[in-house]
Amino acid sequence: MTSGGTIASPVAKRPDGAAGRYATALYELADERQQIDMVVDQADGLARLIDTSPELQSFLRNPVLDIAQDRTAMLAVMTAQGFSETLQHFVGVIVNNRRLADLRSILTAFALLVADRRGIVAAEVASAHPLTDLQRVQLRARLTEAGYGRVDIQERVDPSLLGGLVVRVGSRLYDASLQSRLSRLHYSMKGAA
Image (tube, rainbow, N blue to C red):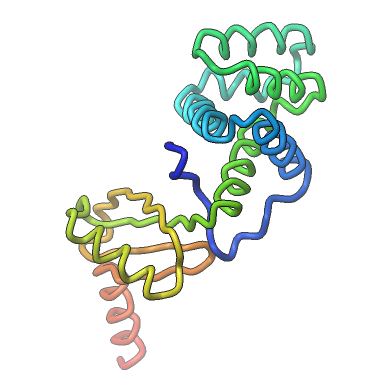
């Protein structure tokens, strides 16, 4: 994720609970050190690393290891990946507070907080085929017309949709897929029989 690509939604409330408090602490630390963009990029990199590494996911959920083992392992991972001292220190605090299992949710809360402060709206778009550049431009224009400010479009291909799009912005779902149209037709025909 680049410094402008943080994920959030217009209706999402600010992160709360322990994850929200840690996310706020990370934001304030990065802001104090004037490293917001770097920390946003690195936090996203760490989130991607967690998402793509089953071994790391298993390690984070392992309650058997003690704090010293957790700290040593996380420091080794973070150093090997080239993460900044700021992020390493933050993860060290999470380890010391026995919140390592919550690291991924803390990073998500941080992304939501940054997006909220930057006024960025995430639109998750599922389509049967990859979007063309023209479709992206048109979709962004439609979302802007609908009142969403800066939009970050997250795309994924879902062949089961058959055609059309499903767009989720916050808790709102816009389903213009062929699959849902066929389902509605099927149910309406069932009711008429």
